[in-house]
Image 1 (cartoon, rainbow, N blue to C red):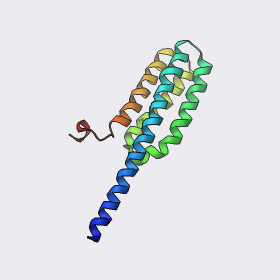
Image 2 (cartoon, one colour):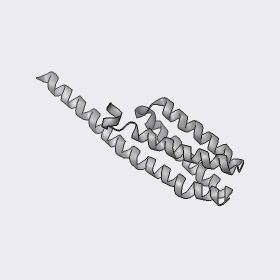
Image 3 (spheres, rainbow, N blue to C red):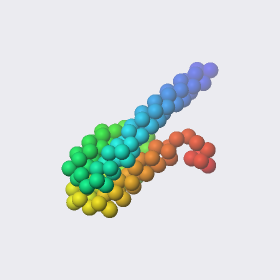
Image 4 (cartoon, one colour):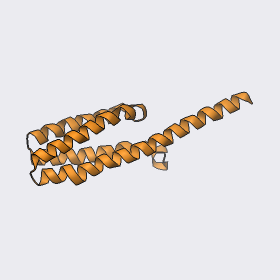
Length: 127
């Protein structure tokens, strides 16, 4: 009986921790993708490279702070791929390369979305 109670408590702690993380990640990843879509891509499209660079720097800082937590729950390779895309986009924005910057920003947006969606418990992810 004692082992059953300990098992139930451990399972509950893990489940609650996971649910808290899913909510945290959902809010933060949506905020990052919204920033890319509504701010950075718009600035790049308008040729406002200074605004795009400062907005992207803010996004990069947020990502690097949140990444420390994501490393516990997400696959390391997926987190690293997003890091690489952020580094490339930063270079493209600094170089004022419109097509490469837009393409990489869209790539980051999709990577963030799939990063979160691939770790949710759904029938698609289980099977």
